[in-house]
Length: 71
Image (cartoon, rainbow, N blue to C red; front, side, top):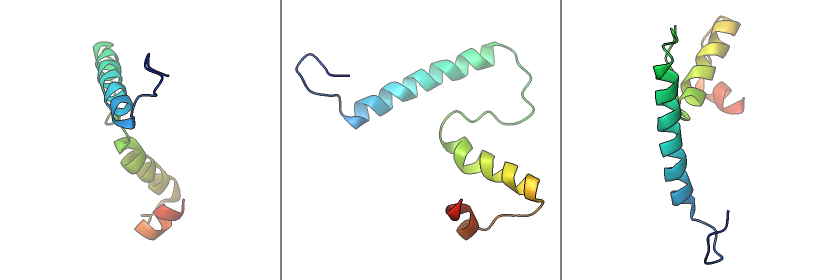
């Protein structure tokens, strides 16, 4: 992805572009009228909270912060 001037776009520009695409994707998912039983996480929030809860349910116990950082 090199612009016409020969320089690659800065990280902030790419991040803003990805955020706009994510918002459109989220709206497309919501327009499909799919019954979600759980919260729909679009950004990195799911990685922080969703996977931890899933692992805790599989293990049957809470995972400490120290343990979670090692995973």
